[in-house]
Image 1 (cartoon, rainbow, N blue to C red):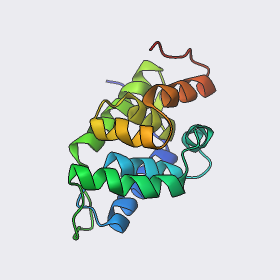
Image 2: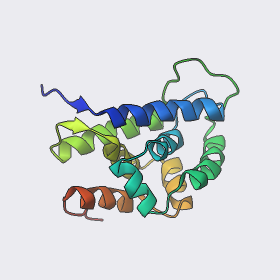
Image 3: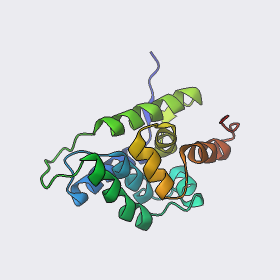
Image 4: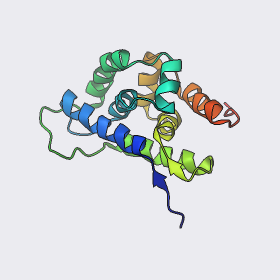
Length: 153
């Protein structure tokens, strides 16, 4: 089994996702929290890809609570260690998978963007659409900046 390094920015993005969940009063980290966490983690390829798609912190903060309210992720209490909902776990797993497919020996925030882009969860697709982008464009943005061919739609 190959050891995979998780870079510091990966950890920062997921910590920001947990802080976002706390701020929003959620009982679990959601895909929207991951997105906002990525936007709050500065100086990353992920932030660049999202901003190139005009996905901003301000817009995400307006849209995410609306999507999460529909999916039932909101709750008025939370503990110190917020777990991830099933959709968020799926995104992290897809992020890890994207790193394997790109033959990277590390995982960074850009892989989390790919995880969001690869997700077929209805709330993720809707969230990205309301933000003016889609999964294919996010994946292509990451792959382009990393020097990989675009995905086939």
